[in-house]
Length: 91
Image (cartoon, rainbow, N blue to C red; front, side, top):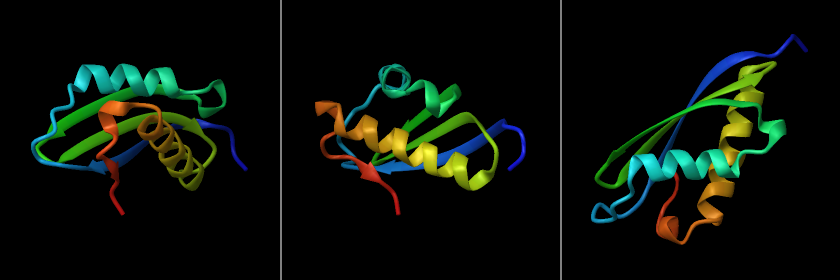
């Protein structure tokens, strides 16, 4: 495996169109859920009705590892917030 490099991962959350999630709140929530081993460097969130785009910049040795970490981090965030109870990772 190569040395870790900064990798961009794009993840989508889907949920009810009427549910309002503030991008700033979700950005902070993702940072609070990150663990040192996730090697999170930057978070960007874009909210539209029924969909949340999450861009995570992670230090990872390969793309597959970065995608896996991003999914674990988003899953952890979904499970730890009542505000996200009706949201899920897009398939």
